[in-house]
Structure formats: structure tokens, C-alpha cells
Length: 402
Image (cartoon, rainbow, N blue to C red; front, side):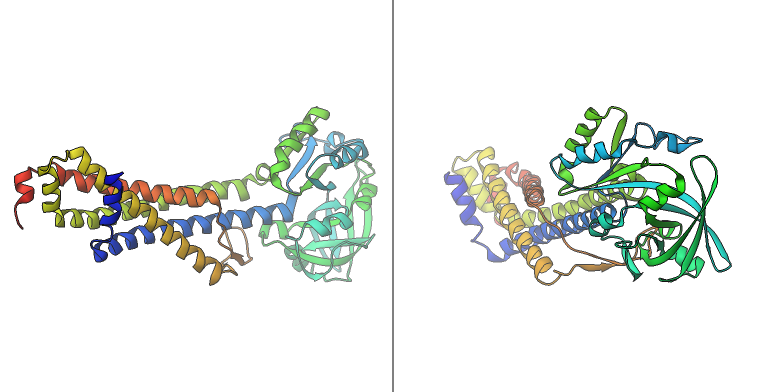
């Protein structure tokens, strides 16, 4: 305890030296904390955008359906959807259930004909949850029994606008040509060029009527919190062995999961770089301060203190420096991020997207713990490396004046 008390009091003996070390630790901890908060903000925003733009928190299909190419896919669609919907509504965390069917065909407006990939949806349900589907013109399918919602790229290619009539030709499950007439209710924009350039949406009952089926291809789920997904998925697969559930990350592996993996790998590289700079900076500052105290350490050794006792004191000072410096750095970073950058940072469009977006810094308790821990470890490592050189020095040499 005496050694620890002395180590703490030593921090106030040379204000300039102490502030230099605290500044080095604080800047390193702040840089690491802010970058981690930024990356977490990117991942959170990307996660929410993916969930609320495409497939919800997850999707249910018949087992093996997504990985298999079928000559007649409709034979493997989900039957008795009403029973499944009731079952899902009883599960904890399930707030929304979205039945869907895929329907491809030819869209015709004036003299322009383009092939598109459609989705039959329940517009009243999806309008509330899928707020990531930005409506640039017009409105959603809500309340429109014969409406069609076009992706921005598809609408531009057709030169179609809200209120225009669209003819649609497709094949039903028996292979017969079917025709439907729709009115454009709105044009949506997700920022994903490929998705916006080929996808349209029509009411589920109209799609089922054109296809001549009462089945649904998939069932998307909206949860109150994604933490409920594993429990819901396990319950579905246990109650319905012929079905399987896939989370949004699995469904959007190329655009979401790969991006997440890349960002996390990038963070680890930057983390190593920052820690290396911090370690070198602390080592340089502490080395200078310890060499300045060479005679003091020589006196301790001459008074009977062992090398281990001296090292304990030096390391204790490093721990104090790591704790105090990292807390100051984290506090200042949090104030700047939440006080001056509370609206986030405007970012350019990401790969495969044309939409700018704001990223807010997202912090949590584990970030604080990990940042403080890494800062303390760096300070201890620097103190040990710097202290070894002096404590191994002969006492007579250490006592010698500069």
C-alpha cells in the first residue's frame, strides 16, 4: 500500500512530465474510442437500413428453397399460411409478419417494355415497418388495391410517374400468360442501384390472383429487437420441420455480412496502429521521466529496495497514468461526439449505393471497458520496458550525477 501511495503521489511531483504522459494516453484512448464508436455507428445504421429496407429481421421459406433452383418454384412455396401467421403472432418479440410472393414479368408503359422482378406484398403492413424504403414520388401501396410501386431505376427506364397506367404480363403456375393493369402509386429509392433498377411491388392478393395460387413464397418477420431472432427461428423450425428461418445477415450476406466483416477487420488494423503509436509515445515519455529520476531510483536501491519493489512502483505509476489518461480521453471524446457531432457525420454513398447517409457515433459499456483496458496494458508495457533499463543499472552508476 505504501508503494502504491507513493506511486500516486509521484504523479504530482513533475506536472509537465505527468501532463505529457496523460496527454499521450488520452489522445490514444480518445482516437481508439472515437473510431470504435464510428465503426459501431456504421454497423448499426447499416443493420437498421438493411432490416427496414428488404427482408425485415429474417425470413421463413420451405427447407432448402433458397439454395435450390426449381423448374416450378411455386410447388415449394409455403402452404397454410394462416396457421403459420397465428403461430408467429404468439412468439415473444414478433411484432410484424409479412407474407410475400415473387412475380416476374414484362412491364409496359406507352411504347417502353422492360422485364422486372416483382414482389406481392400486404401494403398496409409493410408501410409501417419498412421505412428504409424511401418514397421519392407519390405514396406507398397503402389503401391502393390495384397499385404498383416502382423502384427509381425501373421507373426512370419506363419513364413512369405516379398516376400512370402500367400493363403487366406474367405466367401463372400453370404456365399460362396472364395480364394485369396497375396504376403507379409511387416510386421508391433504397440507394441500392441493382435493387432499385429491377424491383417493383404490387398487392399480395393481386399477385396471387395473377399466379393462380393461394400459397406464399416467403414470410418476413419484424421484431421488436433482433435479439429475439434466434429464439423465434428455433421455435419455427421445431414447430414446422419442413420450414427454415434465415436472419437478415444471412439473406444479405454479400451486401451486409461481408461489409460487416470487412469493417471489423479494418478496425482491428487501425486498433493495432493506434496502440502501437500510443505504446511508443508512452514509452518515450516514461523513459525520459525515469531517466530523470535515475538518482532517486538509485537511492531506493541503496536503501534496500529490491529491483522488484522499484518495478512495482514504476508499474503502479503506469497503471495510474493509463486509468486517468484513458478516462480523460474517453470523456473528452464523448463530449465532442455527443455535443458537437450529435447529428452525425455525412458520409458519401457506399459501394453499390447512390445514397448519402449520416453516421452517428454509437458507444456502449464494452467499448469503455476495452478501451480503458487496452490503454492500461499499453501504459504498463511501456513502463516495464522503460523501467527494466534503469533497475538493472548498478547502484553506483545510478547514484552518479548527470
